[in-house]
Length: 368
Image 1: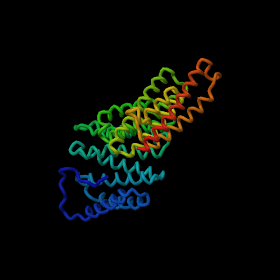
Image 2: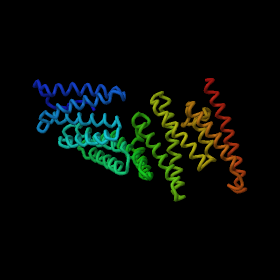
Image 3: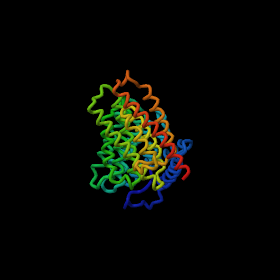
Image 4: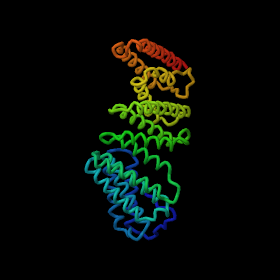
């Protein structure tokens, strides 16, 4: 959390030794925190504690600037404690965010956009610390904190920061899957909301694209849980499957678009996981479409919008085809009935042909 003054805030010109010393400790702590190294976190915590000790002695009750700067101490302290992750530290992190939130709610939130923005982040960070604690009560409180973050964001007089709103919805969708049992249908609905929010800009804005991909990942995980949790309504199952396949296709297309710009390498992890999910889903529920899906992603001559050059995806595709052929070969008249065996043989032949096609495609890519 940057130690910035709000816009148009008067700067105290007095040689206030406490304020100057506190700022030095804060800057040192922020530098350590920004290094991203676990071994310096306790030293960063010490720095923020030193800054906190001094800023609490300043007249923050009557001075807006000092109150604002004090919130930064509590926010950074909570951030470090969350990263350290020990159970007692996570409890202390929640306390730190509570202190920051109380101070922030005492500021004129619409006087400066930084005020409301930090309040939203305070609730979001509180949710994260609670989420790491685990346990039913902590998860309920984490979900409540996200609702408070959304309320704080939407109650402002200015247009809400859509990236913050998207982050709140993303965190809610992922959190819902951590409950026991998972609240999969609610997670699916949150993911849908986020995909709709990110859709207009996800082909041009990296953050929107990343959140859109993560939302599709949560959507697919939620569908998998719904399909594996009895009793499953066949009518809903068909709809969930159709929508999940659409989400996987959208994700493959989106990552292909960004790959053309040779940017956003972090998307490859999500692309790989969603591709494997698609392979698993088709094999389990619609094996007759598996070969078509894999070829759309991996066959360079198809000119498909889903196409990827990824060697990792090629390896995963070959693995999926090999496994699918073996699984389907074990099925026979006793499982399917005589009338379906002929179709089964056709599907296995299609899978084998797809495997050969992918081998050829990979060879062409390597030669090129």
